[in-house]
Each structure stands twice: as C-alpha cells, then as structure tokens.
Length: 101
Image (cartoon, rainbow, N blue to C red; front, side, top):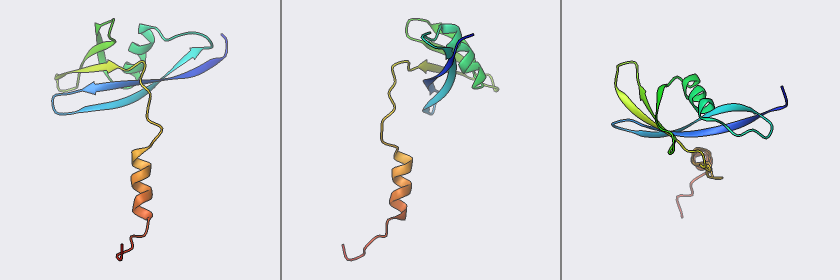
C-alpha cells in the first residue's frame, strides 16, 4: 500500500427544518480519486444511514434513528471560504468598544 493522503469531503445535510454543511475525511492512496464507495463509507462513518439516490449528482437518501428521511448532497467541488466567520466573530468580541465613536 502506497502513501495515503487525506481528502476532505464536504456534504450538505438537508432536513425538513434545516440545512447544514458538514465535512468528513477519506484516506486515499496518492494519485487516486475518491469512488462512490469511498463517499458511502465516509458518510456511514459520520453516522448517516445512507442509500445512493442519484449517482450523477452525488445525492444520498438517509434515515435518522426516528425513521425520518433526509437528504445528503456531496459537494465534491466545494471550496470553503478562506474567512472563518466564527473566528472573526470571536475576535470582534475581544475588541474594546469605544463609546465615543
């Protein structure tokens, strides 16, 4: 087995009331692209009981513990913003506010 590299996978979890972008990790041999089986394994390791719904668009149907269906859309070309909103918000909370401004 050759050298392994980490491949971040971003996916959108779509439920009735909310949508969240989450991420998982796939370990691949150098030069290898992820397969559909890699994505399925990654989502299952993240705790999702998935079934492939649309192979072309990387969409999965999943069922939670209560039996409710939800959807997962793998965002293979997703680029996370260089800006970290949580870190920016946290840093702003430490900036002293000048009441004269």
